[in-house]
Length: 277
Image 1 (cartoon, rainbow, N blue to C red):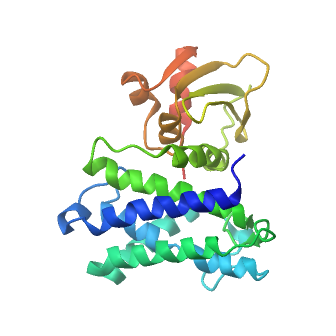
Image 2: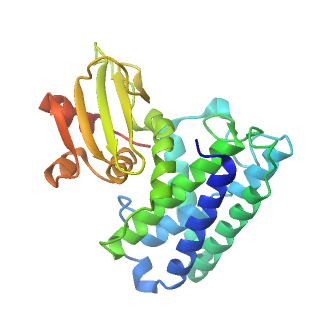
């Protein structure tokens, strides 16, 4: 199992890899559409820069996981409103920093590396503010790696069709799917019997996961002993691109990046029920 200290080094490596790349982008590159639907490259960069993870972590390390000034209370959390606030904050950050956006983003990335590298062995389980509910420092570290890796893909994949996620990033992203699933599917009263979708993931991050969709939403866990309703097979990168909403099930099947065994309607239905957040 990856330790928080190792994950912090993965974050530092991912930040170092993207800093030089961002510094070399042209203004025309920033205006191009990213792989994140309806967001330009500059929008994605502003989103990454607009989240003050360093502040949240520092407060948590001091024992304070109350909402920072201007942040909503956990009791008022709503997934759709949460997504809208993220979008609004990205636009505001882009407008505020304009031509200095790249430098500002690099500064924020360096800050978050510094704060996570300062965490002591006894502090990883301390709670920090997070809109859906307080999370441990080590959980927010994994989330930051996953978010940076995924949004780096949003930027780089449209400018370089040979770009791939690193194996280390994929391993962290796979763990992050467990949290992302709660936002990827909404409650569906039309589902009377839970549907089990098994993902057999091949490659360096080889594992098997069951995603069970029911009327109350979706749950994910290790593959069980019972036969699933449908089985998907893919590599780790394809799995995370699907589960983070960057690749449609139908496209992955059509391009040979995903295979399935079972009811075709259930295989396609998995993608149709995916909402994201």
